[in-house]
Image (cartoon, rainbow, N blue to C red):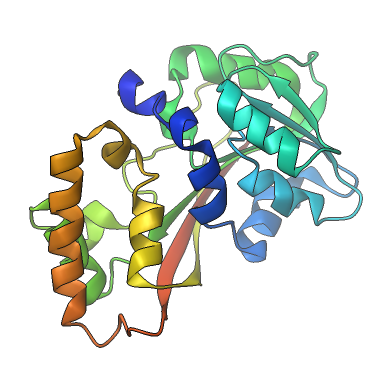
Length: 250
C-alpha cells in the first residue's frame, strides 16, 4: 500500500494544487470514456480539487459525480465547481448505490488506494460492462533534459523508465474486471522555471520534505535549468505524457 503520510499530504496545499497542477488532454479523457457510451453517468473518484472533474464537465451529456476524502481538497472543488455533485468519500467507501455509474475515472490518485478494498468497492458501484480508468500526468522522460533536471532535483540518476509519467502506477483490479488496456497521450503546459517550482511544490515528496531539503532540491534544479536552452527565461512548454489505463466491469 502507498505511503499514508504522503497520501494525506495534499490537503495542506489544496489552493496551490488547484492553481498549478495540469489538467488532462481531451484525447486521454475521450479514450478513457469511450466504452461507457453517450450520456454516461461518471464518477470522478479521489477527485482532489477537480482537475479531472472540470474536463468531464466540458463534455455534453455526461452526469458527473465527484468523490474526495480530503476536506480541504473537497472544499476547493466545491468552490471552483459549485454545480457538481461533490461528496465526501473514498475509494474504499464510495457513497453511491450499487451499479449506479457507467464509468469510474481516477486522475493521479489510483496508486494511493488500498487495492484489496478499493477495487471491490469500485466494482460495486459500476454497472456490468462499465469502465474503470486511471489517468496519470507525468513529464516526458524520453527527453534527455527532462531526465537531467529530475536527476538534479532528486540527487540521483533518473531513467526514462523511472521518471516517465505513470510508471509504477499499475492497474490490477482483480477478478471483477477484464484485461487492462494502456495508452499514452502526449501534451504540454506553458510554464516558467518559477512556475515549475510552484507545481513541484504540490508533489507529495515536496509536501512531506523538510524546508531545507526541499529548498536544496529546487536550487539544484534551478542551477541545471539555467544552462538548458529548452527552459527559456521567457517561458517554455513542459512536455507531458498522460498514461491512461482502462478496464471493464465483468
